[in-house]
Image 1 (cartoon, rainbow, N blue to C red):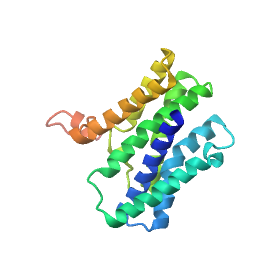
Image 2 (cartoon, helix red, strand yellow; image 1 turned 90 degrees about the horizontal axis):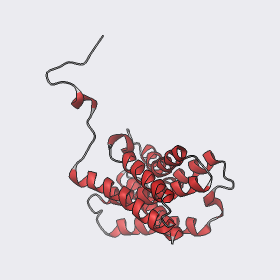
Image 3 (spheres, rainbow, N blue to C red; image 1 turned 90 degrees about the vertical axis):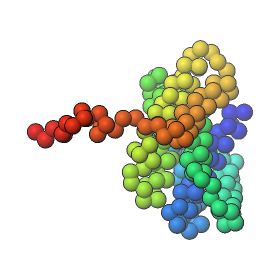
Length: 211
């Protein structure tokens, strides 16, 4: 069940990579590059930090096949149908929610400390989006423009760690935690929620300190 959930998250990130390439007017090859970059960057960084060899995707032909099929399928869809409104944000939120939880699970399995589990889970979730946006020439990346993004991943990682410590089963813990991430992210998107910007914290009528 967890492997199926993981493949769903990877598929969502692969689709988000193609959608981002479409918006950036890239060719099909660029779309596939972004599909792979968005899908495997976070897990690759996590495995390198944990010194896990071989890298998880180098011996999982099912995973690579899913990325290719979803990437090509998304391109075909975009060839004949119009891009739905906010579709990139939705599939990105799905990928973020699932991959963050998988990152937490992998870190726990590697014996990482609780704080390291949370850090690795967030890195696993957000790295693919950062790499995708950088390759698309989007500066700053979505992570630095949307406040409730890494915070959503952080909340999901903490939720998973707590449920794990309470003895909740792996599948329910993953489903609940992924739901927390997805709910926070999409709630922020549709309600326009943001953390206060530095300019909003400045007293009214005040001027920035130039000393």
